[in-house]
Image (spheres, rainbow, N blue to C red):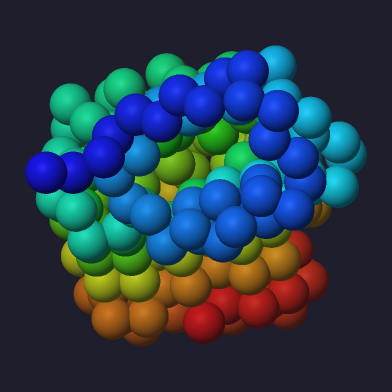
Length: 196
């Protein structure tokens, strides 16, 4: 049996107990609902929970398109989660489209890990379109997503006006000489500080 919902409302739980819960949340990949209402949690306890959720990862779960769509809807209302790891989930082009919508509307997300998700060039186009206007994302991991020169060019065109993204991970894709030259030009103009 897997725990997906935890309701501990109105139990008088304080910061010390919340720290233990936060520690458990850092590695939990199944909990989808957490209710902490009407407890004795101060800013210190809330910070522990926020830190745990900030670093929680859902990678390697084969979420697929339907799950990513639901996650994307929730993220549009998110005002605490700054790091999202959804690598190794086979989200594909459609999932990239949902996450592109998130990047268009979310002003909190700073780091997004999309490693090994079969996004391809068509999916990268959605991510790139979102990067044109996004002002918060600093790190984007697109390692092992079957991106070719075409996808690299989508990213390069988007990043010409993006001054926020500082780390772009593109290892283990299918970027050849043309894409590599364009990426080098982007670096030369100091639009992105690190392409890995």
